[in-house]
Length: 195
Image (cartoon, rainbow, N blue to C red; front, side):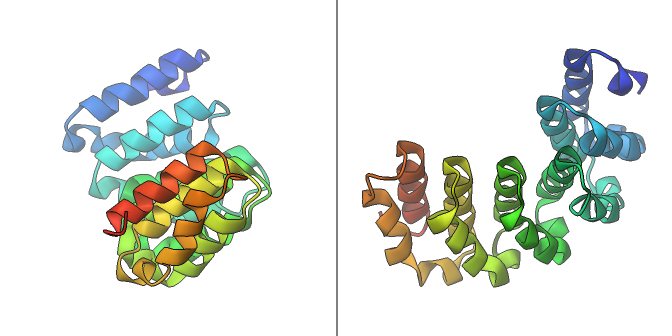
């Protein structure tokens, strides 16, 4: 759709939202164009909307995974963000790429680190081999949003996360941490049945 390339960000976002509202099969022919927006748009809100659309188009989106993984090592942080958002949208279908996402947990850009953590959470237990990196990000990252996303994603790793309940519990009582981090840690504990 040409509207995905419109010069107005709100038009590009609205177009991506239309794909989200469509049946996945109807949007499948546009998977490559949607991935172009996820990877190339300079407006984060458009990238997020396009990533959601990519997740809706189903199996057609999986063919875009190699491009999304390649984007994780791009020099431009917006492109790296797009790669992580796109892989998050694929969820468990991106599990074979979890190691690439785990590598972005130490990205220079906080929003790339946050998106990588969220993507590992979207993959769920299939990314459990990277739970230690998520735990480290939850406990040590300099950014509150990254710590919150990492705590939430860590809990999504299933039984491996349950072994570290005490570590996550520390985040709920640390008044040096922002309220959002403490809330995310409490919700993570709740999802592990430990709240």
